[in-house]
Length: 313
Image (cartoon, rainbow, N blue to C red; front, side, top):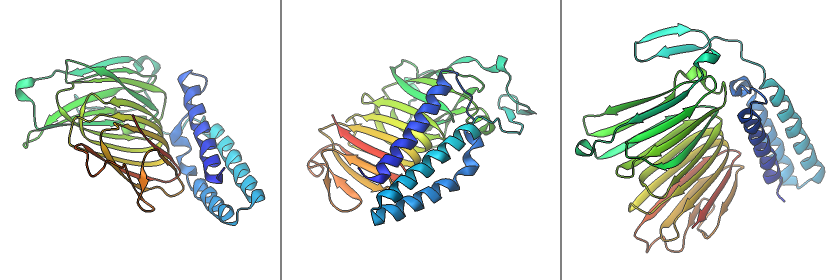
């Protein structure tokens, strides 16, 4: 087995284990406490490239040992609460106050916006952001959007804007960037199936599970750090663009067999598994029906130490 796949598997086990322990309230993990150690991964990547080139078994064992020791260090450092104050922004009243969110402010929220068929715009942009969060699409709603939020420390807000060119933008975000990665949060989403959706996700550490097979999705854009992304797309529009940019992530995308698909992968040390695709060159992959299919999906991957997988259903 290739050394980079083994090392990536160890990283995924670490991230998944930390998220699981957080979800069961076993530990409090502060991801922002370990970001300052990110150059360590450049060193590990360099050692990996060096020994992978020489195909040295001893070198591979050294690389794995360095990675394990590093992750153990990060595990303990990540449980140290950052020594700084958090700014909480009250967007409704335009006021700011200093201090951490108290336990009493951790709550369950139900956020929604009504669907107005008469004023439906050309397209609807959904922007989602939040760290230490699990996002999951739970199905359809008669509202435009509905979100059930379960938080430990943070609060989410949902804002709607309509531009002059009739584009509706929905912004679902954690209140105050300073709150990112301070706890475990769960957001269950429901969307209306009528609009043409453009989804833009920006998250640090977290998970996203989106079954979009029943939705008209023109674009799906994901920018994440240590994240797990599982997306299922449908075939309700002639063209769908998917752009995924990650640091360390586990990404799986499911596409319809009837749709033609082209993948452009700029993946560095990442592992790739594109079942049913023909490799055209080092970075381009296509399904056999790409030129003849009515519906086409274009996927762009850009990742450092990630796992990218595309399956057809």
